[in-house]
Amino acid sequence: MRSRKIKIVGVPLDLGQGRRGVDMGPSALRVAGLNSRIRALGYTVEDAGNVPVVIAETAPAGDPRAKYLTEVSESCRKHARWVEGILRGGFLPLVLGGDHSIAVGTVSGVANFYRGKKKKVGLIWIDAHADINTPETSPSGNIHGMPLACCLGLGPVELSRIYGFTPKVSPANVALVGARDLDEGEKRILKEQGVHVQTMRDIDERGMRSVMQKAIDIAAHGTAGFCVSFDMDSVDPTVAPGVGTPVPGGISYREAHLAMEMIADTGQMVSLELVEVNPVIDSQNKTATLGVELALSALGKKIL
Image (cartoon, rainbow, N blue to C red; front, side, top):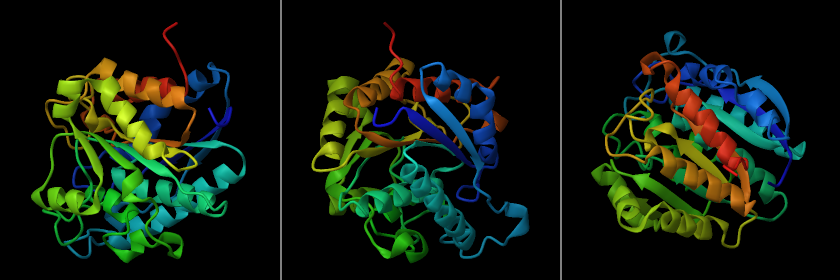
């Protein structure tokens, strides 16, 4: 890995989606032994705590096309500064969500850090959904369905122009893996933007090894490295039941680990985030436990 030092930061935000409970995701992952198990791999681990966020009961939803936009963008700006500071300190950021809207903060912070070095970053987005809606295309107005769009310079300026520049990542360096539930507007935007998408059919037909090698090639090409954003709903709900928006027919347990193991092999990961763990609807913290295991694989844990 780039660094043997990991700094964990939680972002207990649930304003980006309609189903409550993902605000407890960072706690669930910590309870599952995240910190101690990473230390056991030989890393120095520090925990920065949680980024302060607004809770739904204290703020109006606002524009139904982009609910809680002011509050989500404020949280993402704070989070971006935390992530950038973590990188400046020589640590690799491990971000715990929270809903997927927090990815705007993660990617913005990483992109700004490397922009200062005149370098760009790639992005591997492992998710059942594309999260590339805009307020104009979103069926729900939930911002957790918009973060990839914001990272590409689309959507609300409050999110897409954090730090004053856009896009944070080039579409040519973005790889979406495991998609199986796309809105019609998202399909159009993906084609227009030229994002490389590998759906569950691609995994079925070619296998996870081929799919991930392609994703890594795209995200690493001409970049300083790549962010990894792992939505736990990418995994099949029989394996990861405690997620905000479960969709049948997802990635298997071993496919998920292979994806993360291949990422570790590259040594090119510059940040990792795990999002959408919802312990309210989980079973005995099963999903958070899987999230910890996947983080360990991404950080180099091997079977042998």
